[in-house]
Every structure is written in structure tokens, then in C-alpha cells.
Figure 1 (cartoon, one colour):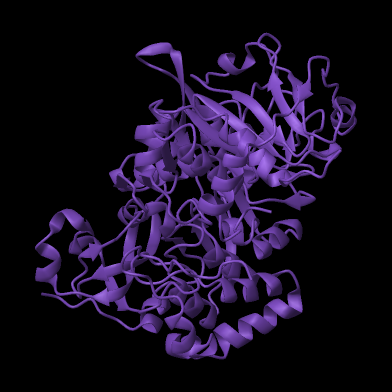
Figure 2 (figure 1 turned 45 degrees about the horizontal axis):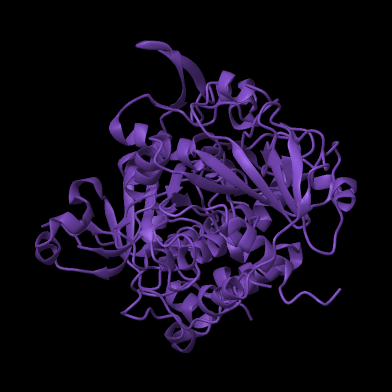
Length: 320
Length: 256
């Protein structure tokens, strides 16, 4: 059996400037944050990001100046912060290029890519400005093959002309990076709880990098194949990164960290404070272990560990 | 008038919860819709089925989620899957009875903007989170309940961007756009409850909250609002308030 284990810094170094990337997770859950921090340490530039509902993974990358263009449905930490602060500032200052879709249409686009189809139809978007308006000009689209030449296309069903659908273009990314609960060194992946769109995103990428809370024996995962999400041959690299999604939640392992999220959200609106946050928590800690120390070490992490009964921390203080 | 024994959030939550019928499939979002859905499940609609767009189906919440993808949404769920399963098999296929929506701007036809204020494309003056699943819920749920803060600027004549299509330009314009079902049925605001005329699909005031008048609501709306049949919003019962405070949100995550 091949070992695909690599160090986080090695895995992050495989993504070049200007790459097309999608990250797994959903708003405040299961983003590959340790990997994102590593991209910032390595000063990655001009990334093209594709996502449905990212959260602080995109927000901090945008704030750190790593991102050129995004295609998305939503960017926020939901009830913790209802608009991604660096995302909002980047748009309002003209520092980022973007295109708006909806969650369903973005998932349909990843699914088309995962299925090897050029597009998929959906009944959503009709009547909305998500369909009628576009933030990227036709010129911007024509000039860059990383973006679809057309945002969407309305057509009537060839089987019933009364029936109108919207075709949305497939997404293929060079990289997908997902953070999961369990993986073998060979790349068999198990996701516990909601899968979000991680499976489609992985299947729609040329190179799949998995960061995992736990490394589990391949044979153990294969005893219950119905619980697994990805077969090893679609996964190229595996990194063992406990607490790799902090400050976000990983079902069965740990909860989101309200203290750290508050520290981020209260810094992000001010350029100087945001730089202080970046230095203190991302740039000065040389690696993930040092990051975990910087946020309060084991003492903090202990307060986040999931109760076995619930899969999250039932007594977590979420509003302080 | 004696001081109210409930807060505005509690009044709105109860009004929203009463829009859910027993046995319905409910697509709940973060915040007040979660409170409302959970309250309905504990009171008049024990068999309503709560779906969260990030992939959980038929949740029986023990603790309020702060995200539709929260591990708390998995509690007692019949199924854990992903966005694909929920959007394709549930929402698009027409299995969702009622969805909840909110936004920064709402017009007289219940079209909602949660994308940006100002000229678009180009440089918007203010940028919001974007659609998320809102556009999809607005397009594909059998009906939607809109929750909103009632201010003049939030109820403009036209929204700057239609993130979530309501009745579009009124009358049959929604059906003509190709949308196969749905449309907003009610708007629960911080000042009252608004519904849509059957024919014109324009908003009218159904009820104003205690302590306000129908004219107060009209004055805080940029478009002309029919207020002639408005009555006072029914107040929460002691049982509803008890369940809301003690069972639904004892942590005060969203209750104010």
C-alpha cells in the first residue's frame, strides 16, 4: 500500500500562485484551516477560489492578499459574523474579482465537474438577479480560461418546451483541499456528519489533498465501506493534522471556538488590527503546533472537545 | 398599557412559528427561523420535519445551531447527507413546504436583496454575504416566510438586486418567469405581519404589533401599504413563552 502522507508545509507548497482551488467545509465547520494558514505563511498569491458557503477560510486568505478571483454563493460565519469582514472590505475597495451564484447552483456546478459533464440544469435562479446580472464582465471571462466564458444559460426542455431550466457550467479545479475526521495513509476517506459538498469538490479536482484529524488503518475503514466518502485512488496527498479545522467545528472531535472567532471578528474590520491578528496567529507561529500554542494550547482545546453523546460540546459558552 | 411580558424577538418568533403547520417539511435558516421551527415542533406542529441545507434531514434539536451546518443540527436527525441531497431531492423535487428567508431589502412584491447595495456590477456601496441557499429556497419551496427588520430604507420601492425572487412584478409574473412553484406568503417584521393580495401580489398590512398603530407601520415603509384591514398581532401565550425560554433557547443564543 502506498503512503500518501506528507507534511502540511509540503502539501501547501504544491499549490502554485494563480491556481484554481476549492476548500471543503461549510461556514463554521470543517474547513482545512491549518492548510489555509500554511498558504498564507508561504505568501501564495492570485488564487482562484470556488465555493458554496465558505467562511473564515476564505476571509483570512482574502485579507492576507492571497486571492485574485472567487466564485461563490455566500461568505460569512453565519450567526458569529453575518458578512465576512475582509470579503466585504475587499469588494467595497475593488481589491477582488468575484461572481455570485447560489448554494444550489454552485453545488450543481461542482457536481457537473465531478460527473465529467459540461453543465447541469437546475430549476433555481429563474427570475433572480443572480441569473440576470454578472459581476465579471464578458471581457474578463474571455481573457481567462479559469472562468467559464458564460455565467449561466436559460433553455427550454427539448422534451417539453413549456419547461424552462437554467444550465450552470461545470467547475474543474486544479486542487481540492478537504479536512475530514478519518483517513488512511493510502487516502481512503471517512467523513462523519454532514458531507457538505466535499465529495463533489474532491471529484471535480485534478489533485485532492486531504487533511485529517486521525489516521486510521486502511483495513479498519474497509470493514465498513458504506461509511466512507472517497476511495484512495482519487486522493493524492494525506496530512495528519489534529485540530486542523480550529477555530471551526469538526463533528465528533471538537466544537467551534467562540473565543477565537470573536478575536478574529473584532480584528478583521480594522486593517492594523487584522495585520496584528495575522502576525500573532498565522505568521509568527511557524507551524500548526505553534499555532495551537498561540491560541491557548491544550487548556483551550480541552474546552472544545466534543461530548461523545452529542458529537459537539453541549456546555460550550457561545455568547460571552 | 401594562408593560409587555415578552420581547419583540419573542413576539416575532411566535408569529413565525404559527406559520408552520403540523406535518410540514420546513427548511430552516440560522437565527429566528430556527427558534420558530423548534418552537413549532414543541407546540402545535410536533410532526413538522426540520431540514437544514448543509445536509441534515428531520433534525430533533437539543441545542440551537449557530450554523445550518452546525454539528447541533445532527441531533436526532433521520439522515445526514450533503447539500446535493437536500437541494436536489428535497427542495428542487418539491418536497419542502415552507422555507424561511431574510435580507437587507424587501420590496412590495416580496423580492429580497441579500447581495449588495448600490450599482451592480461594478463597485457596490455595501456588500453582504450573498445568496447562500436563499435564492434556491425562494425559487423552489412551496411557500416562504420572510423575517425582516422594519425600517423605511429596508422596505424600498425597488430592491437594488433580486437575490431571492418573490412575486417579481406582481400578478402572474412569477409563473411567467418559469418558476414552477412557490412564492412568499408572509413577511414577519419588527413592526407587524404583512401578507400578499391574492390578485396583485402586493404586500398589505395584516397586523401591527402591540404598542404600534397601522399608520406607524405605513410610515416606516417606502411604498404605499394597504393598512385598512389590519388588526393587532396576537400576543404569545404563556405556554409558548415558557417553551421558548426554557426548552428552545435557555442559552439565549438568539432570544433577546
